[in-house]
Amino acid sequence: MLMATPSTDLRNVAAFAIHSEIHSARPDVGCAAHSHSVYGRAFCATGRTLDMLTQDSCVFYNDHVLYDNFQGVVLASDEGKHIAKALGHRKAALLGNHGLLTAGRTIEEVVAYFVLLDKCCEVQLAADASSAGSGKPLVHIGEKEAQVTWEALGHSSNGYFMGLPLFQTVEAELGPRTFLGRGVEPI
Image (cartoon, rainbow, N blue to C red; front, side, top):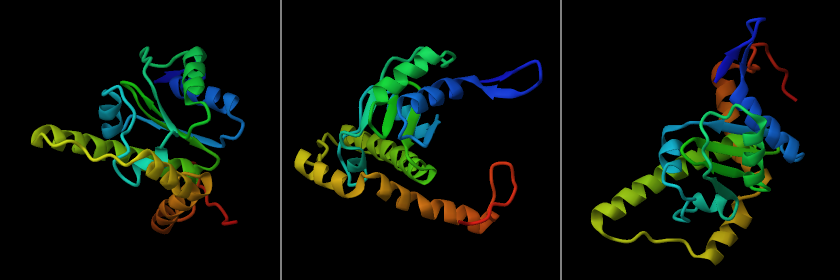
């Protein structure tokens, strides 16, 4: 929700309430992403966490949480504190009836995990629909296999390397820029 102040600045009060509390609670977090994607919102309305159905979903094995205390638009830091507490040490939260949230050390990691989480929600919804329509149960990945996969793919540096090509593609198409449109020198 954008709110105009007397100086006509636009501030996203809800974003600040969530993100500031995550950064306050998690000094290791350099970036957090939150949005209301179609598949994220649809899956978050199911009131559950992801099933371990694919290699990609295993990236979030024991590393995501359902926050199911939707209180409407987040306008107070107390709600942000509750979300940050629920997130804990994990990389992702499914905000019930709301959307997705990812957190990590770098923007590349966080964006990669956000995109992947949204895709996992899409796959979960499709798999659930297929199972319901066919009457056949879903095939879940075992806990041991999910843990091994998470250990191989679920760490921060892997997230960074997954996200880097996304940013390289944008830079190749638009050139190096910041959100203000000024050029940025590569490191």
